[in-house]
Length: 243
Image (cartoon, rainbow, N blue to C red):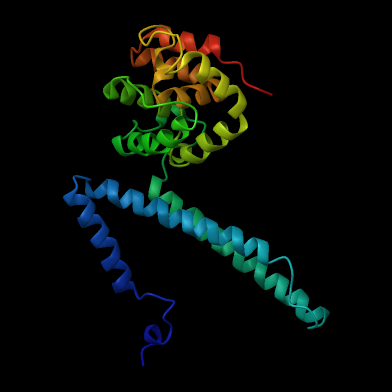
């Protein structure tokens, strides 16, 4: 019997390739380019490996009891070596998914924001925004322009992890954000077309996160995209990061 047939927990390379190709083809029928589909699959793979690395690290700190000091020392050394290698595999998987690219501190060399990066940000923002407000009435095309400016302040690797950053931002500033959307968002007395217009869009949450994390870079991207200055000024004046 072939080793792969003896272990139902493992898939052979041909089966893995088949699953990957099936996903790419199904997404292709829905209009998703093959490159974008491969990127999404790569990010999922990198995330699974990173999760496995974290779990291995948690388990590697304690050797089985009752085996003796020498056994424990060898077990811990082996566990550390294994988790380090797993961490390296996860890192390489992420690099393949987002590309090696320029250094994090070289924004002038970062590639342009891709449509799939915008789509991932939109998917991340929708449920977070709805936890504070109601459905947006703002033009989706303008929303995409805003997100392109927001993502332009980040490296490809940072864009890949932006959903997590947004989730942490929303959790850390929830009371402040709740008050802000109640005062200026949908359902408030503030008019849709004005300096607080962007609070009627899910993209406002991304803009607020960037105002807290990288205000100068955001202003630069905003001006380059020729977005309405009043929108950014309105959010800037209303946003005071909570402690």
